[in-house]
Length: 321
Image 1 (spheres, rainbow, N blue to C red):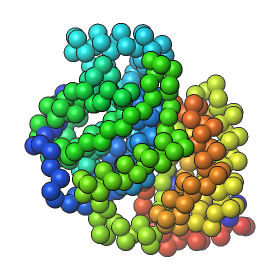
Image 2 (cartoon, rainbow, N blue to C red; image 1 turned 90 degrees about the horizontal axis):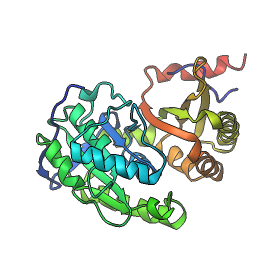
Image 3 (cartoon, rainbow, N blue to C red; image 1 turned 135 degrees about the vertical axis):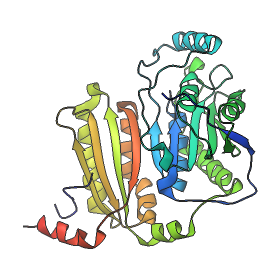
């Protein structure tokens, strides 16, 4: 119990680009970074998580009010019709306080050599004027098509930085998630090199804080109800192992909403950013990640900052009584 903490908790406008710029260094505060991604086979999601690992910020998956069909041929047909008609599918995902973000990473697969309609919906729904927009992409080997150009066109008043693209799965051929093993290491290296190339860095104050101060995060996860009990068992095992075996893990405190048990919330507390990065490499976390991949419908990672860190030790002491 000593490691667990009890509390913590469509205006249609254009949004983008003065062109690709990467001559100036962009110092980031994680609280002002938003990473939004659309992912069908979890490859774009994996890249989004790699970016999040490097720059921090808020990680949000785009979801539709009416999800696309599971059948590959059916979704290809529907997306082609939407592209032809210009239809923008309504989003279930809502971004609160967009004005608080300065840097927006937007991630998506290439569909029909174009920007997927849900990402078009996002870029039309939110005004990203004056913000820095950074696209990233996974595809089946045919490249980005017109997707990056469309991002620029939909964001005429934003600064667009050079995007990132990597080959993912080939759903047409039955090849789905590929971001594991050597492929994962390869893409992680390329993501790191890309971030360095576009000169995205943590601000000096933020960087020192990440090294010296505790890292706090709330994970907001929606689980497929068919897998809920299995997921909870795996999560419980992973949380216990992390707190027991890792000195830098202060707390991993899983919870679920009483009225909607498929909505999971996890309070995560680490001694510092380095402890978090080491946690991601542990066997128990890797096991959790790979075994729950198909169970997770959506994931949002929200970086937090303690209002009164000085009293935190007293909170833990009360748990011993």
